[in-house]
Amino acid sequence: MLSRRALPSLNDLSRSVLRTGLAILSRQKRLDGLFLVDATCGNGHDTLFLADTLAGLGARCPILAFDIQPEAIARSRQRLGPHGGGVIFYERGHETLAEVLAEYAPKPRLAAVVYNLGFLPGSDRRVTTTAERSMASLAAAAAALAGGGLMSVHAYGGHPGGSEELEAASDWFGALPAGQWTTAGYALRNKEKNPETLFLAEKTADICFNPHPAPSAGRLRPDGWEPGGLPPP
Figure 1 (spheres, helix red, strand yellow):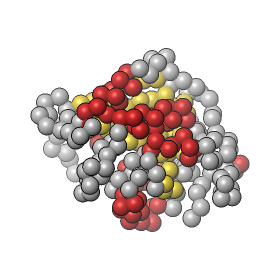
Figure 2: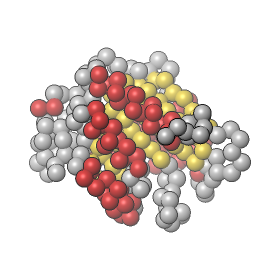
Figure 3: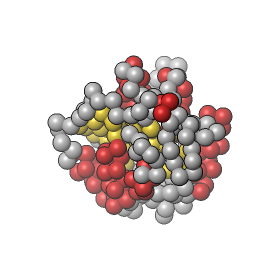
Figure 4: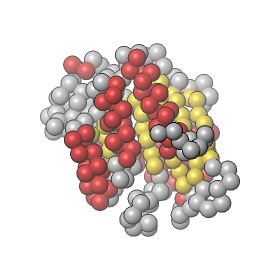
């Protein structure tokens, strides 16, 4: 159906960029074996988008989905339904991303990382992401991102602590070295309440380097999983 608006929503813009970036990695034969991360799975919309995008590309990539709230994990599982076979859920805060990645051997590289900061819609608004925890997670994601990989961070400033987190994200993206990253920020400039900004980054360093083993090599975790790059059913 034809949209009534010429300008995309920030959510649509994020997905358009992620879809394009993952398609490029797929055409370069560099996507299989990389991991994707939904750092704040919430109601599961972004997790489902990532799963559907990978399915459309025929790619074999595990998706790690984080949320500190059991309610969010349950909602996401329900939304994904039969599309969740490639998703591994972690009922942990996104600031533990580095710890989770360290559980895998070899340590995985990431194709895309998605954040939707703030609070879980329809839940206790006192439970929110914070600037300190989000910056720790962003640092871990940036270090693990493969060349050509993408980060998408949707930050909101209308809730307690939100403006500090949005400002911290803006400073963090602005400090990424230009020779290794391309970054952008998109904001609704005339929105009077609850400001929001979408930050996007593409890692241009090592963009020609194949950072992952062949999918048949498998990956090991403490639980003994060795499925050739895919999570257990």
